[in-house]
Image (cartoon, rainbow, N blue to C red):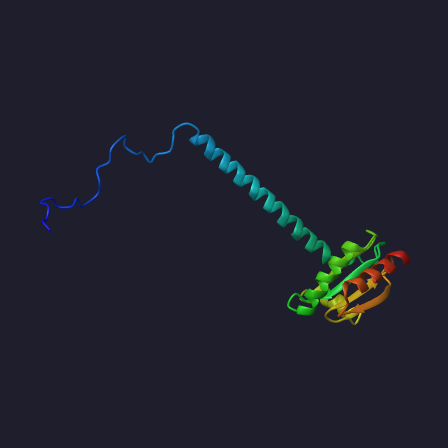
Length: 163
């Protein structure tokens, strides 16, 4: 077979047509950036509001001075590092969501705080314990872990009805 005298073309092929530009179009650039910034500010404000609400809810939950202030109260003796305490807290919150009465208050005696530890000691309560108080601050019942949601809902409904 006879070789042709032409060598194969190497390198990049020549481009034909208009040159390609990489700069953004001039129209709408500033407006688009302003929309992105406004959207970012709105998302930030939403997230900050949610975090603020959760933080305030947590502070309210740890306010043990509400016990005996007229509203029946459920107080959980709680340690954030205790796995059973965390399981019980999830069940309590879920059960409270199913209770027909919004007359019950919920507080947490955090064993990592001085006030929470003093409160738990006053009532001889340890980890994973629920203390149910009437509106006058009298202890009416104790519930210890394990306590499933159905049992908690029944206990909370009974507590709301008697107070």
